[in-house]
Length: 72
Image (tube, rainbow, N blue to C red; front, side, top):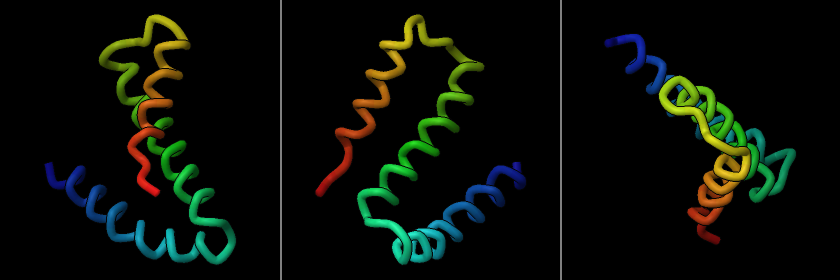
């Protein structure tokens, strides 16, 4: 139980520093899209163990919905 908690703390703790570093090289929109893409890949790998999408269209729909949560 302690290992997942430590992993989460490490990821959240380094996210701020990583974002500040990335903003020196990329626009804010590009950094945001990279973060969403990485999260989508990780969550796709985790959810495939639970339930496989029936079609690629379903997976693309979920990706599109994740983009709608962005506030400008």
